[in-house]
Image 1 (cartoon, rainbow, N blue to C red):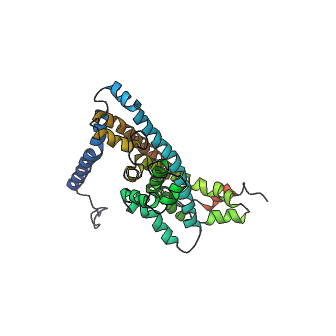
Image 2 (image 1 turned 180 degrees about the vertical axis):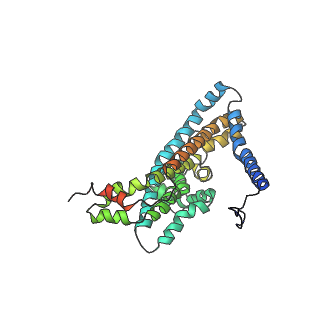
Image 3 (image 1 turned 60 degrees about the vertical axis):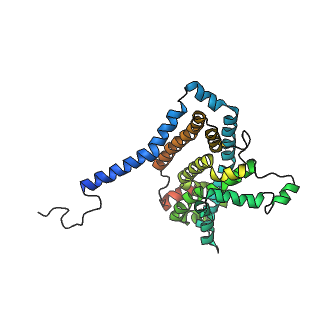
Length: 298
């Protein structure tokens, strides 16, 4: 009897030596680049004791940095979520000239350095910028204040929600929405009864990633915030400030908050993936009909 695998070309990695070398290489890189820094942050944060750690977190400048970071996320994430849903809906459910151009524009923040984005905002909203004189006349302060921080954070995180939704909504197609519309459902009823249930896990997945990036953004925010201690410093900027002040323990204590956020984000990300976020699946027409038909009455 012929061997089941006889005559078939070997797969990449079938060699036991190659598998061991590859796995060892990956584990070494993971240990050096990911695990070791996280361990160092935890050890250094408590290097002067729990009391010092608590005092560092409770310092007014640190508390203000945490509050500013949270406020920025509370403003930027919902706006980018609404933008991502609207962009994905427009791109996947409608045909219009410039669709490909819109997709490219949405991807721009991924290819542009955050610092370059911050400098661009200086030339738009700064005193010598495009709208600087008009804003100064109306006594509206954008840069070196909360609005500038929010705008910079929104720019770097604009694609996250849209990137999660567009492939999924393209795979799902338009059949269910068209069926709901033919049954008399309004646009909002179609969205909330048909579209949203089918994209909810991918939407939450994008929101989690967007929130994590907003809270950890450094480059663009460092340019537009002015780095004013206790006023416009977000948590990442405050960590750098403490480190430059030779307060390593305080810097690591503040950094442990962001590290904890990263771990929580990872846990939520894995949980959402297990619920189906990120998987491109086309729901059956029968399931969609079951969702729509009871809602629409003649």
